[in-house]
Length: 298
Image 1 (cartoon, rainbow, N blue to C red):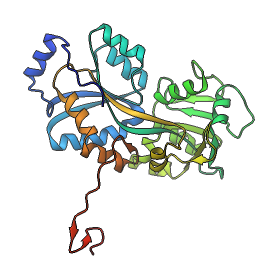
Image 2 (image 1 turned 135 degrees about the vertical axis):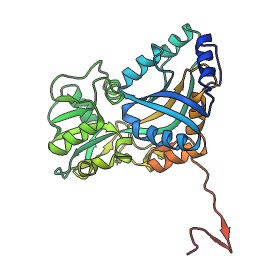
Image 3 (image 1 turned 120 degrees about the vertical axis):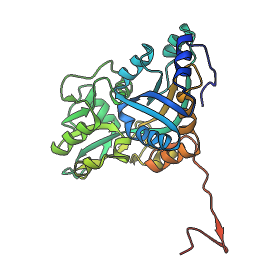
Image 4 (image 1 turned 120 degrees about the horizontal axis):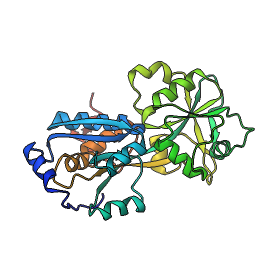
C-alpha cells in the first residue's frame, strides 16, 4: 500500500492548507490523472465528493505530462498506470520527499479493430513485429491515443523501442478519438486503455458497437485471452498494468483521504463494478432471512 511517511514539504504549503481548512476529508484539491484511466478516477471522485465535503478538479493528461507536473510541483496528487521507477524515486529523494504510493486496481491495454473484420484474435508478437517494421500480418496500421501516453510507453518498452515508428503508426489525443477512427477504418488496430471500454461514455455507444475488442495471445503462454476481469484476476491476459495514486502533498490533506478511499472497501467495490480488478477483492456479505439469502428471496 506504499510508504506511510509524512515529510516536511515547505512551511508555506502547510500554512496554505490550514488557511483552506483542508483535511483528509474536506477542502479542495487537484488530481492529475493519466488520460487512459480517467473513467475509473471520475467514478471514484464522484462518490468521494458525494460522501464528504470535498471538491476535486480533475486534470486529464498524457502519462508524461502528468509525471512532469508532479516533478515540477505543479501537481501533488496524481493517478498513473504504473509505479514510479527507481530513477524517479531517486529524484524525489534528492528533494527529501517520500511519495506515498497506493496501488488500487489492475487495468490493461486492449487492442480493438473494426467490426467488419471477422477475426477477433491477435498475437502480441505480430503487433510487436509491426512496430519494428515487419509487415505481412493483417495489420494495416496501429493507432495510439497520444505520443506521450502510457499506452505508447508500455508498447515501446515491450518492443524494445525508444520511440514510435513513423510508418503506419498513428497518434491522436484521446482514447475516444482512437476508438472512433478504428470504427471507421477497417484493418486498423487501436491501442487503448481497457478502462475506456469497460466504462465508455454514453456518447460513444454507437462507436463501441462498431468495434471488436480482440483476444490476445501472449509471448509466453498458449491460447488467446480477452481483456476481462476474470482473466485479469488469473493473470492470463498478457497486457496487464497496475493503477496507483501517488500523493506528494506532504501533509494530512485530501491526497491522503482519497488514497485511503480508493484502496478501502467502497473504493474497491467501485473498481470491481467498473470491470477492472480491485487490488483487494471486497468481501461479499450475505444477509440470511428465514433460511434464505436476499438473492434467493423473491
